[in-house]
Amino acid sequence: MLQRKPLQSGRFTVEIRWLEAFIAVAEELHFGRAAARLRLAQSPLSQTIRKLEKELGATLFDRSTRSVALTPAGQAFLPHAHRVFEELELAQQATRATSGVVYGTVAIGFSGALNHLTLPPLTRAVRQRYPNISLSLTGRVMTRGGVEQLEQGALDIAFVGLPIDPSPVRTRRVGREPLGAALPIDHPLAGETAIDLADLAEDGFITIPAAAGSSLQELATQACVKAGFRPRVVQEITDPYMILTLVSAGVGVALMPAGISDIMPSASVFVPLRGEQTHMEHALAWLDDNPSPVTRAVLELAEEVLPHPAD
Image (cartoon, one colour):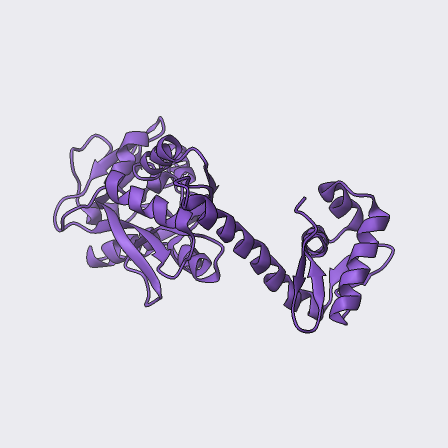
């Protein structure tokens, strides 16, 4: 637990431990679980929350014998409480950086199998060069969600597909792969060295849901329309590797970037497409105004270890 240092303003004084207690109860919505998380008895925790409410002049929780819920005042106060701890973390990072030690946590979002050529080199390099950096990795993050989480501060870095909608988020391309067909091994075209996309017009497709905001889903649909048909979707799933698994199970076919050919599951094959290629472009995304020196260190390392693909 953090030391009990007060935060003062012209009107009130709040101890850091009060904010820590508030955040724990707000996230658990249960005083017993929050007390266990903070290694406190429940009674002192309740007293701490009451002190905070008295100092703020507002009730933060609706309490009953069966449930705990944030009041509107509590909901409004929560992001500011989180911000205090974020600023303390940034202060620790900054002071350690002056002595040459890079220390802290970087939150990275990625989609899963689509990033198997770019995420591992980066995380491995971070571990080797900056052993005091902790990486918080979140999978199944599609492009739209990654951009939104960067803007909200929930992520520091995200692997996304290009292009993205207009946004304060900055991007740097790290991969460019042509789309190809993932087919069950018993598909009539599975033995071909290359096929026309129009040859799959009658097949059922496995895709990421359109509502998920995936660049791959948008590119795959555009490629099919360009080939003269709209894909008949038989299954939607957000995990790219599960798409390959369902292809292997014979559920349908899918369009995937060529790099996926290295990790195809058994009973499935990757077949390149003939003709004009549709490319998926992978990128790192971040906010320029992110003040974290740790995030900057990881981005600088990414410049060294991740590709700079040509057009």
